[in-house]
Image (cartoon, rainbow, N blue to C red):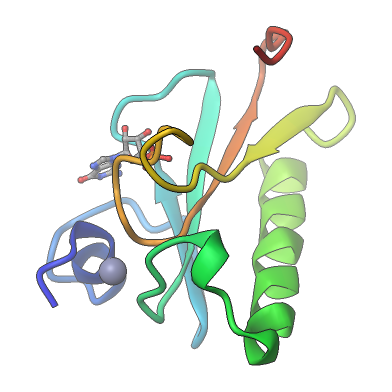
Length: 112
Ligand code: 5GP
Ligand code: ZN
């Protein structure tokens, strides 16, 4: 699978891995939109959040738990942060491997 996020998770493409376990990995976004901008991904290649199976509900909860931990570790849990999941072309998804964006460290604008 020639997917950049799969390759990062497998360690084939070097990245500053901030968190990893048997199901997930997290690393800084290469083009950060905020002082804290971390991507949290499942190791399993899932194209988009719309492709999640019922059996993957726990995996999704795990990704959110990792985002919370990283928010605490990066000092934005108290000030506030945003989790974003883009899906599909009109959702603005550029990398077709499910990922959560953790954004924080500045006042984020309103959506829309
Ligand atoms: P999307 O638009 O798909 O929700 O977000 C993809 C994100 O991945 C973008 O914010 C982009 O900057 C980031 N990105 C794309 N390629 C790489 C890469 O090779 N390494 C890292 N760390 N981030 C990447
Ligand atoms: Zn992938």
